[in-house]
Image (cartoon, rainbow, N blue to C red):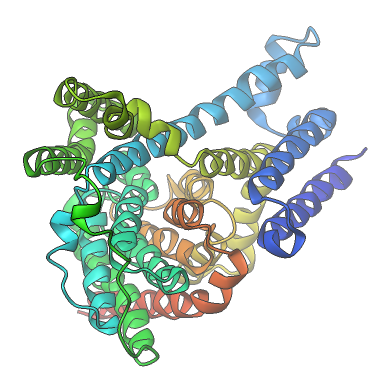
Length: 454
């Protein structure tokens, strides 16, 4: 098969697979199964057409000149796939660690410390409270972990599943908005920060207001459509069931767990190790503490209050879905589809603001990490540090993923935890997220114009 045929076939397969994921409920095929199948098919196509696609890459050519012994396919399998799998594994282990810590806090009823203080049942007030907490927590934590924590909170505050889905959609928007202005709030801003494209103070000053706008606009619009009060989950009377933890145990696990989550970016800054090592450190510490804390209790209680028991309740399908969709995108990245897209954007659009807006829209479909990586490679030697292109790239890539539920790590995590339907999110949330995204982008453009004129 020639280069262009195989190149096009991979695009067609990806679109078909993506459509099957979106139509999970009508097709009655789990999205995780589709994502894993899509990933394997794309990598098989990549290997079959290895010479026609990958020989166009300089790195592959350099290797083949040094090793002309027919070891091409071995190198493809052992190097290209392993390199991508290593990056994806960092996200997977981070997700596993964060979900386990949150589940452990929840099993100790630690979130009562927050939910008992949120007394309002008014839908509009609760929406603003949840949005505000999510936004600022995401900036100091990260959007994916924040989304996991906030969904656990929503389960304590809202009983009706469809109402909770609506609030979970707002959590996705607020988490991505809060992560976009912080150098440690989103993986793409972390990439730009570590790569030297942006500095801490500048990225906060230049993108904070647009990020706020991207959350506030949907909040305002949604507020006009919401009426009434939420129904709290039915609570079992305390006299009917023994409290699994004491107030001391509940407070200790809650504050220690949240503190360890917040320590992850600090750990990364101090050690320069990837975030998943920090989350594993936090998980191991909490594991030891809970083992000691409950060592005298019977097995029935211990199975619910220690990490060994909590791990059985972790939704592994979400983790496997992450693995599948990221491997599929990695295949397109390796084949050069994303590089070609970046070049087309540069030639056909030209305007840097519009390029960033398009990248943000595209990040709702394709993982924003390879998109930002491609942009960094293209413009690394073109724009200086703290150039407006880098700042707007951080905003657009961070918030654009809210438009579709599988467009961000936060969205995928919430989708897995709450089993939210892709089409439901598209109908109920995507429009509001798009309005906020475009409003924030317009705000950044106006701020940049004013700054240049001043």
